Length: 253
Image (cartoon, rainbow, N blue to C red):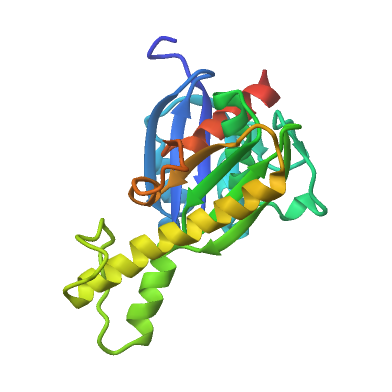
């Protein structure tokens, strides 16, 4: 690909807190950027990608209003593919109402199966909520788990109590906190690892597969939490965007 040739894909992962953009060819992400979803306007969208040249847009959105904005901004000049259970994902969807599955979760499932070439698999995505997406040995998305995200939990404590401060999350110095901040860090990080570990135990047991699942983490706090959880084999920060690239290949090839 020469510098004056457009890349195949603009990938957009539009979530509640942040919107991630990537310029991609069929094999890898070439560049990526992020802005706050609240600041997303037609003008900011155009400005964000003004120096990128691409053919197709692949969009995963869980914010309907912003999805409409993104679609309307680009659709006159670029074919737009919106991720849903109705397109080719490289996996099947075994779920009572597949229209209720978040597009980012479908992208994660598509990515983990293609990249790791093994099933069953579990993706843990540490976003505004922490989500667990489960892919069976039959390469089917079979469901998941949703729990409050780390920011939601710690911000709630700060907002609902008079003396607990807002904290920046990091590894606590010890399990037994010697200050209010250290005690909150211990509760958040160690407590959250306990939540994740127990959910993994229960979901793996229900999968009932002879082959243990590959467990992959992604999202903002993936590296922090996974550092204390040997159950998580790998952290892939851009897994969702990689899933959009894979889905683009499946549907635009």
